[in-house]
Image (cartoon, rainbow, N blue to C red; front, side):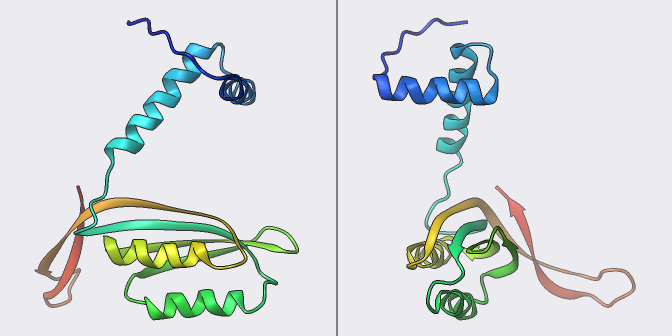
Length: 155
């Protein structure tokens, strides 16, 4: 095991100590190792702009914001070829969370997600992408005759 010395400013150290207490770490080293692993995972699962992906767009919005629900629905209708499924959750009297599962060209999914997150009244938003390859297959399921359809292969 390697020993590394890191200098952190006071504000960052305070945030780290809050995470340590909240998550119940035994010491700072354990917390920093876990955070480093998470950062490495995030940095290495890159999704190129070209190609295909599957993704989850998660956002919280004020359902009473003028026309927002209507605009969000219109956005997903305009990009219906990307949408697989939507889960809608009522968080409280004012806020809803939606989780949209998307599939298709990475560039289109990013563009659509950025449009949703930028809408006035959307309070939090995050897009998680996983690179995939789309492969055409021709075979039957059960007793049905063969037909062509796409399979997703995670990279």
